[in-house]
Image 1 (spheres, rainbow, N blue to C red):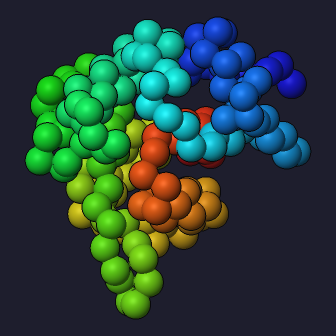
Image 2: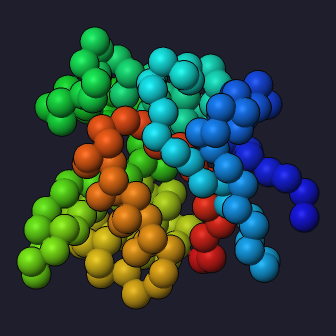
Length: 156
C-alpha cells in the first residue's frame, strides 16, 4: 500500500510526522494518519494541498485572531465559499446524559459521498464505527482546545 497523506504538502507532512504530531496507522485494508493536537502556529494555510482545506484553515485562523480558538460568532461558513460543500460544523450538546455533537452543517459534497445529509442529526445517530471513533476526538477537542489534523479512510 502506498503511503498517502494527500491533504498536506510534503514539507508539512514531514514536519508533523517528525515532531510526533502525526502518526501512520495501518490496519488490514485501511491506512489512516492519526493526528495529535498542535499549535496553530505549526501550520499555515499554504501547507494544505486542497483549496477547501486552505480556505477553511485560513478562515479559522482569521476568526481566532490572537485567541486560542475563534468564537462561534466569528466563524462564518459563508466566508469560506470554496470549502462550504466540504465543511462540517458540530455543536457540542448533551444527549441522553452523554456528550454528543449535533451536525449544524453537513456539507453537500460530504452528504453526496456518504448518501445522506446529517444536518440536524447527532454523531450518535450514526450506526457505524468510524463516526463513533471520531466522537472521541471531538470530546478531546473540547478539553485540548487546539487544532487537530488527521485523515481517515471511510467506507461509502
